[in-house]
Image (cartoon, rainbow, N blue to C red; front, side, top):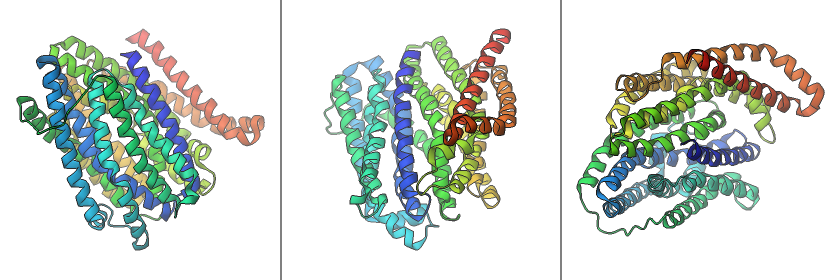
Length: 498
């Protein structure tokens, strides 16, 4: 498991580093103003739909069904299921895409009603370029699920790298386009085609050969459709909260949507490298073990994955909260991205970071249920968390602005993951104890207090040593010291009390 996790995490880390380079270029070229907000909206909206109808819902419903069919009924039955689902998935996405392309203004009015009139015209134009990305990502999600079920994880983990490389290249020749936002939008379109091509080639290399034809209704397809409904509701509930961020941010001062974007990108770095990678590996593993009746194996895999997420999330939370302003300044302050923008984004990053422990753990916990074919329990827990999340957003946005939206997101994550954890413990899906969490929490709290007290002396010393590179040196020294201290203390306490 750890070897495969290393493969996924390694490629995801490369993708996130490339994504960081992409965001550095976006920040320098677009900054955080109306032009940047127009592209962020045009890019976020198809991603919202993708998360509902492609990656989240599709993987949750299809992968366990496909894995069980392959184990119990053989390869030909699994291929027949995959071929039928591919036809349906493509047809639904084409219908959705046609509707959005026919009435993009209505889509924008519904999902981002606070957009300025002048900004709306550019956003609509960019949406027509970026929305086909939805179809591409749906196909990527399909072939990724197939490959994961065959224990092939590399291509799916590497595919996002192409998006980042294409956007970096597009922004590098932005002078050839009407605006840099146009360059970024066309890069997204081209990257989607490249990602689909990569996954199809990987599927063929793995010996997966599908011949789409007339969809057939079989017991496996009925099971997939029964699971798809709750899965769409679950993914939809997540996106309702994200939609709320987008809608409310359009009513805030110009640049707020961009501040949210840059803070979220830093927050998503560990979530992607650790949390999503763990969930990607754990879901097919539990699905296979569930089909074979291996309860002890499922318990062992899930508990180990969840413990890893908690142990790494605790010190990362401290670093992002205490050193968040240094992170934003070192990474983004250049060109159109100034120090005031960095400070605003750092406050939002701190609010997001309060939800890093549940953010890293959620995919592992959800996999415990989805791998067993239970998609209703995660939806019910998420529905409660989403109601609280949106209520908090509406309450906090007037006082804290964009930071209030991020804080509400963290609170919603804690409610969701807390509910799933209690249910998973009661059903014997995980054996992680509250004491295991506290063993990670206490060293992190102590380290956070020490790091905050030593911030200014550390920065002064590093500036004296490295001059203009002082803040970067201080960030590296402070961040690595915090991580090493917390993890070493966690290991010692685990041996003493574990």
